[in-house]
Amino acid sequence: MTSLLPTSALTPSRVPGEDAPDAEVIRFAQTLDGYAAVGGGDVAALGRYVQALDPAPPEALGLDDLRILLFARQRAHSHQGGGWPGEPDRVMQEMRRLTALIRTRVEERGQGVAVWRGDLTRLDVDAIVNAANERMLGGGGVDGAIHRAAGPELLAACRAVPEVRPGVRCPTGEARLTPGFDLPARFVIHTVGPVWRGGAAGEPAQLASAYRAALTRAAEHDLESVAFPAISTGVYGYPPADAARVAVVTVRAVLAERERPLRVLLVAYDAQAEEALEHALAEGEES
Ligand code: APR
Image (tube, rainbow, N blue to C red; front, side, top):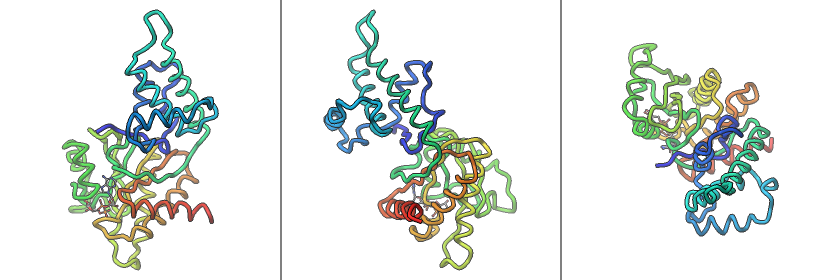
């Protein structure tokens, strides 16, 4: 399963520099699923999309289109190879030009939070957040998916996290960081959200604390991109719309206080979660 780096999570340090080797430019071009990005999912749809971009100069294109164009050029380059022996590799030169444009745009963009629909374990971000439990020894839901994708070393790393009291490694509302092992993400930040008990047992504050604690771990490690699942909205029963509001308000507040992280993704695994998160994002913008 290929790893993905959505444009909304792209940060300057992830874009190859001017003197990066060709292989790095090629690898970067592949961090976008260009076929999915054009909605058609196939080569013909990608070709039509790129044709429709012509004759706009790359300088006039937005960040999403620049990455799709780079993806398309890389596919062409991998099929037809570089230039003729002894001639300049014009496709590679264009890929470098597109990459430099992307880097400038990403540097100018600065901090932000966005919703992304898909499987958190595929994300090639600096850290993904795990909706864990206080034992931190794995479970179902996203916890199970992360442990499956990270491999057995993640469980060993969780076991090595000291208990703060019998059976508790990470109290509700706190967060612990471990390496990501076989995941595309470098780190996993394990946090524990509250079990929903009707909303009058301090759940909103505990959920906000879980988001804030996870972002504090990320800032301590100078991480630039972090992706969250919809914490507590699965097994723990937190209503998605209420949880989305807490997530958006808390993440925005922390980003306003700190330089790091730069980009935060709120990952929706299903349509309901996506709608709740998009609504919470828009709500915040209006106020
Ligand atoms: N990628 C992104 N999101 C996912 C994924 C995935 N691969 N798998 C599940 N989700 C979503 C669910 O759809 C839900 O919206 O993660 C959200 C959180 O659901 P849970 O994983 O059930 O987590 P939570 O409600 O916080 O309950 C935590 O569940 O798995 C156990 O060990 C865990 O005891 C802990 C409890």
